[in-house]
Amino acid sequence: MPLKDIAAVPLPHQVRQREQGWVSETHSPKPSNIFLKLAAIERAKSISHAFLSKSLGSRSSSFIRPRTRKQKKKQIWASIPECLSSVKTDQLRCTVRQLMLPGLGILAADDSINQLGLRLNAIHLENTAINRRRYHEMLLNIDGASYGRLNDYLSGVLMREESMDQTGYSGKNLSQLLKERNVLLGIRFDKALEKLVGCDREYIASGLDSLSESIRRMKDIGVKFGLFRCVYRISDHTPSRLALTENSIVLARFAVICQQLTIVPILAPEVLAGGNHGYEEARGVLRDILTTLVKIMSEHRVYLAGAIIRVAACSPGLCFKDHRDLKRVANNMAKTLNESIPPAIGGILMSRQESLCESVAILNNIQICRVKKPFIVSFCFSRVIQQGVDSIWAGQNKNLDKARAELMRRAELCGLAAMGQWLNEATSIFISVESSTSLSETLSD
Image (cartoon, rainbow, N blue to C red; front, side, top):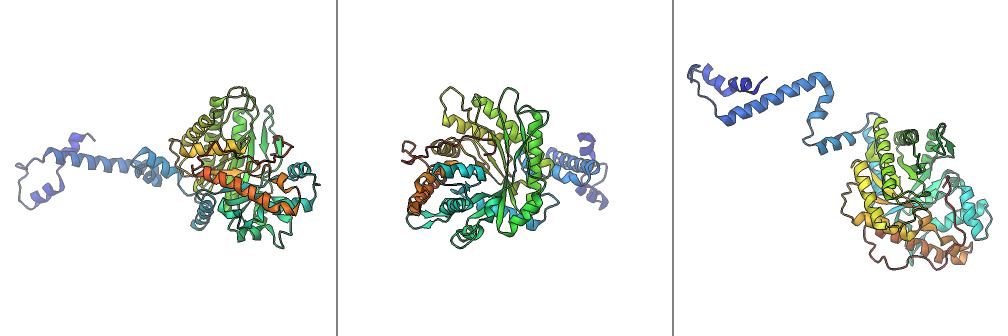
């Protein structure tokens, strides 16, 4: 209806005056321009609302309520899936809050049996169940006055499922040990990588077949979160659109299954460090990975506030010849996260870099850069925190205090960087004794 026709319709107070005989119809006072505009606006709103209600049904309210584009986007992403009850969403948010406390991160002690065997062989120990248990006890049974407690710098510990069968942690099992220290226990659920048919040197993560049974079994012993990892290579032809889509579907399905069982999912799309790609190429690939993942998570109705994403910084490849500018890497990473991840996400965890110095510097620069970050960014490090600790320990009980003190020092540096408070970049943060054996990067990291 044209605005002039809408404005010609008598206002309610004019109708009442005519009915009561106060004003004749032929000598009705003409309303002022402001009243005409207000009337036109109100009638236009009612007509548009009726039109949307008729064409969109019950969905119309979600299109009308947001005042701005940002509010509309936030409302869509923050919506709760119908399949999750309020009790489940509350539990998921509570676990996310505990994991993403400021200054705290996650220790990823999720080495496979073969990878842990490399660590043990480097310090002249056999890869036996007893030595693996002793190594985990050295890492996790920390409660000393001189070097602090485990929960001073860590909110969670990520393990492998086979590690849950270990016993003898000072007479307690692993879940009891961590629960006493107010540290959450998580499990890495992905299995071996399988070659993606039709793609050149690209892989897809496996492990969804028996995921529900594994989660139920782990939940009974106190597991609160789980991680699933997929990998990508950067080359002239990879990652392909098929690899991006298929791996994102696997991660989204993992998240849905976890949330149904009130386990917080940590989705870990990881770009392998090999290659000669530069800054912008690494940033572009990571942006494609994250946007594809978020889109498919939306299609699978994943509850974003109850999920966490773990990513590695978009750094140049190891074969990149130019100087590596860590501040540029951090700024690119912050911009990519801001462009690709909706604010409703539970949090972002930074994955490993090549060294502790590099990891801490990038994480600290992400926190202090001027790019807006509407979500919490913390860390989930493995080798960065553990590197060199095993060399100090060397399988000797007399070295436990020194090894644990070094572990806590490294975790403290990561915690300071997670709050943007790591200021003394000139200070050497490497231990005096480094492991002589370098653990090469493998697909099953």
